[in-house]
Image 1: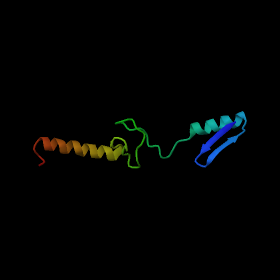
Image 2 (image 1 turned 90 degrees about the horizontal axis):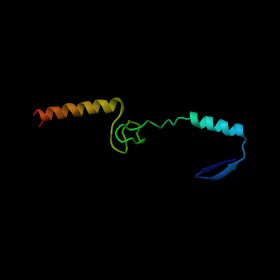
Image 3 (image 1 turned 120 degrees about the horizontal axis):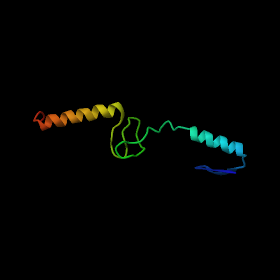
Image 4 (image 1 turned 90 degrees about the vertical axis):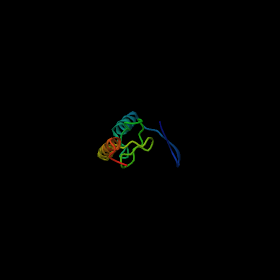
Length: 84
């Protein structure tokens, strides 16, 4: 038997072993298109479409690298008296 619970209610299905195996295989192969990976900063899994971690603010991907590089350059320039 297979029980399914959704926001619309519960349903129980009687299925055979081959259906259970097929469902397990399908679920194992499924990849969520909205899953953008794990944050390298906090380990959270809530990266938005811009690869910005909703939990800690860490930026990922090329955009994150470019912004981090710019911040490091700006901080180095400020430390040398170049900004201000």
